[in-house]
Image (cartoon, rainbow, N blue to C red; front, top):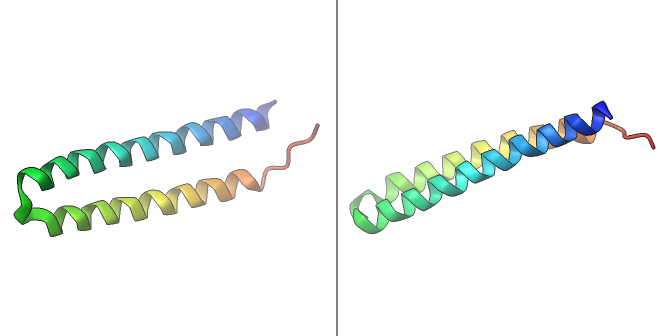
Length: 71
């Protein structure tokens, strides 16, 4: 049962990371609409955040996938 709890905890952490990434993308989208001259800076920031979140998620998935659940 402990192994399932570890998997669920990891999934919750990843869900929060992707939710935060989505919220930031929406905020940056509105900023781009309101202030078009800062487009390059905001797009670059979004790409850096998406890259970091993707790497962290991949690491977390790798750790979780090494756990073998036994019936």
